[in-house]
Image (cartoon, rainbow, N blue to C red):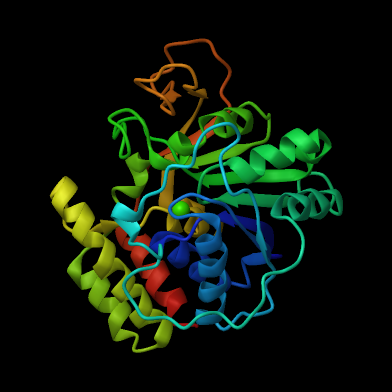
Length: 313
Ligand SMILES: [Ca+2]
């Protein structure tokens, strides 16, 4: 099997960090062409820095990291320090990165990279608001056919919302960008809260990360220690959900996930339900399916994969 070529578009974020580590630990399945940072959980100066911190934690300093859009298409940035801490990577004490940011804008990197590849051969993995991806599609509509698949974390149907009662954070922050992506015609796989809320870091699972005894293993344990406080309080759940690693785990073991190929549209008008992913799970409309919307995962299989791969770093 040849490794799947991907671009990770991200706003780290502890769970983004784990998603990136999983990808970088899996070169047989995943070829990370580059990492593009976007404003989201925290502002862009922190997300681009955090992306480099994570590459260094993985020992992969040759991965190019680009800074992208610092604000949504036509809204003010909403951030989530209440979940992720003021750095976005609160928890472990990690050194400032030595590896430089790669010159150039993330959006141009996405465009140039896709143009340099054959149709249907590069997978985009958005882990934050969809601003960079939508901007690239608007600037260069010809690149859409180069996309093999967009595998993204965002949205919710049964779980509804985590930043408002109706909306999941990534989609809510830039609903216009999400709307552009969902209408782009590219094949889309969605990891909504319905799935990611089942990827809970329980104590035994966190102990397994720490027991790796490696710098990445211990850092992941400390990151999830930090942000589980928020989720335990909010949901009364057994631990923190690892949202974004669902994306990179899917690239390695898609059989861990099940869902439905359905129509998904994004609310951009209503103030009350702004950013809601209106997912036609029950197929009550005749709107054409545009996304594989996941609904369930094999959580034990997911954490076994994650622990096994983190051990390789
Ligand atoms: Ca994220």
